[in-house]
Image 1: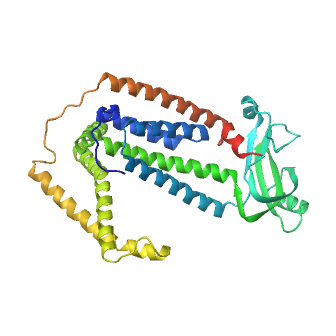
Image 2: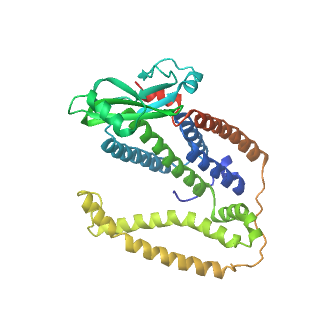
Image 3: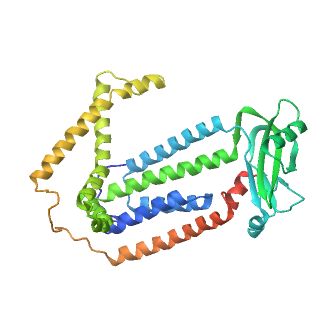
Length: 362
């Protein structure tokens, strides 16, 4: 999350705080619900457009860009180190043919003619012949059957689908090099990076363009229905708004402490990973101490300004809903509705979209 509100004549700054919060929450839901390549790309593109619409400072954009590159690299390295076996994708023909795809099939089971099997592209792998199929039996029986078909030294990959009371098994032999990399690993690393980056940008959008008072007002209206259950909505809204604003403050304090310790000889940039971790541990106690001290100062300041829990208060600021805000909000809702259609379509078709299949299949 980034700090400071830059008061620019941009539409998103002038949004009603409650509408802005609702829009951010809708986008958060889309980020988590997006379950295919196109839906993720469409959601991320919309969030990027919103980000540049507020005319952010270049340093903020650079920080987010570096974060995206770091996240993608880290996730890709983890997946590359863990995933060394081919991934099999199974499609029922009724869904497959409905999309009109006619190429890219690795192998089709001939007797049922109801499923297509795909193997994701993989570099640094050797296959032992073509896939074989078996009807019925359990996993152990299927493994023994496929094992008998392949030479020693090859690993066995088995996939199955249950259809009309019987299990259809597909298996093949393979051997992978230490540098083996799957195309599906690249796609999944990209999708996970998109989700994490989307959350970072959305939270930054909210904190950059919204003040503490506006956040408190928005959370108060969002939680207002809970008053029917006598929940302390006012206190909750203040806590939520302060928690959003406190993180950038602690980050800036941590940077200030790092600069102070670096001037005293502490090296945060050189050395191996263990040395860097040991150097960063020297930040933990000072940051927590400063956090507690600032919370005490904030509490005293709120009391000095007359903040009283459970007291009936009036609203000094009135946030109106402008026509331009409604028009833009409506357009964004249309776009989000289109993305929802992409998500629901993929839910009907399975766990992977045809567009994604074109990218990762042979």
